[in-house]
Image (cartoon, rainbow, N blue to C red; front, side, top):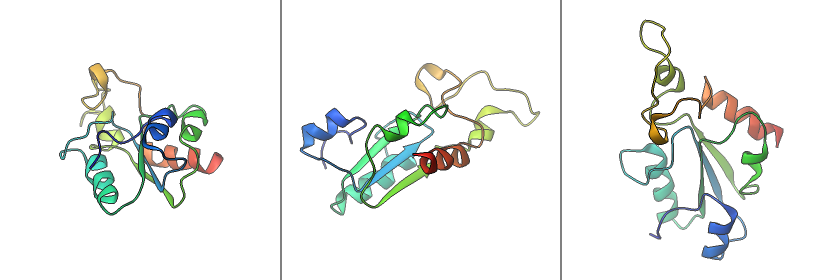
Length: 126
């Protein structure tokens, strides 16, 4: 296994890659640890010889972030994150949460409600 998986074109170039086999889009910040599903899936695919990139918490308001790593050779993989985006945003009493435990600094607003649906739609728009 190499260092961190690429999240930018320049990191891909550092590895000598022109394209990726898979791009995993995650609602969480990129944490390369086995308690994060995106890291487990990505590292497993990498161990099988695939070129995998991570697109953590892309801006869902336009398609630029979704185009930043290019088009994958095989597929986009989409995950809302470790915790469903709606559970992450709202308490059981339907109140907005004040922190996002899976975002840098606990800041909210880096992922949309129903993140998997929104990310899949943005992929279709690219």
